[in-house]
Length: 161
Image 1: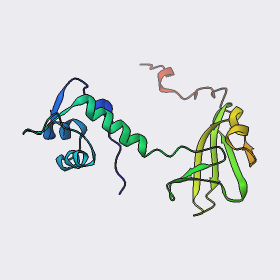
Image 2: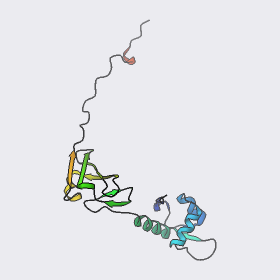
Image 3: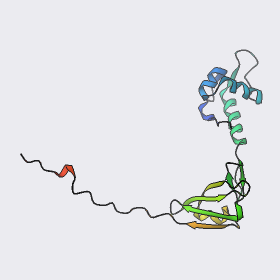
Image 4: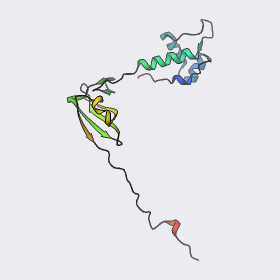
């Protein structure tokens, strides 16, 4: 199972944390904090209890989260099966518009044949998918008028006695 991204902003910069406090603050197990220490998170000193400076923890977690990112270069979409940016199969991409300016690019992975998605702006399509055939589907128009309310509404009934 892939590692969950931990939000580094939950850690206060000018506070020192022990292992249990840091685990509680970030909602992870104490062994996870110890694994981070093994992977390069530096404690304040080597005395017990082991304490970590909040700024160091935040920097470490931000670097760790950034190392997992896989930015998509032009002409590719991210495949969740392959966990890599991949080119679409047969060079064909569908653009399904959500609004007048933005939409979702959909294509099949050229490697595993899984469905890939990517958000994009309609104006940026030539730069996002250069040299690829993009089939554009316009968004369905939204309802502009609402139907009149039902004449059988209870609030309009008059009670006669």
